[in-house]
Image 1 (tube, rainbow, N blue to C red):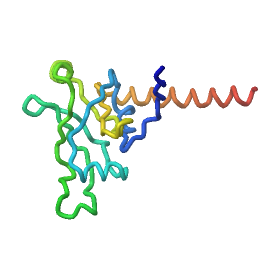
Image 2 (image 1 turned 60 degrees about the vertical axis):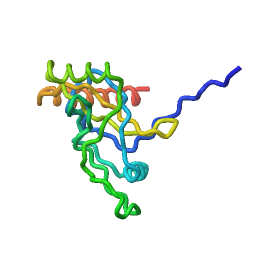
Image 3 (image 1 turned 30 degrees about the horizontal axis):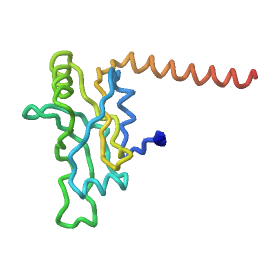
Image 4 (image 1 turned 90 degrees about the horizontal axis):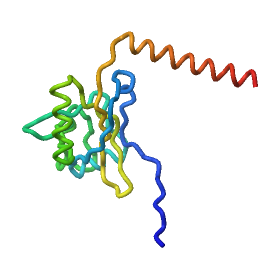
Length: 158
């Protein structure tokens, strides 16, 4: 009898917490990412920034743009360009589906996080997103405040 795998908590190397505030996330996708050795070291140190990162089409392939992974100090002259486009690895059907959604429906592929899976492989959590209007953001803030106040009232009343 084989032992069951335990689901471990995802340890994010970088997160885009603003994305859920600025976009309606319709669907989530997981993609592999092609990295250089110095990029992996820098990611493991938790120094990446993906607040402005998005995925897009380049020559029929899916790439991650505007992700900032700083140079790794110990790599010396084997370092990488911090803002270079990085190729995303997905099945061909998924790539076609996402590119069609981006082109046809006016959606955006936003990077929600970069993490290492159980096997130590870097993955990108992508969200197929639609932009929020200013009034949508205000409504979300209002709802979040009400939930917090309601929880306080329930806790105080017993």
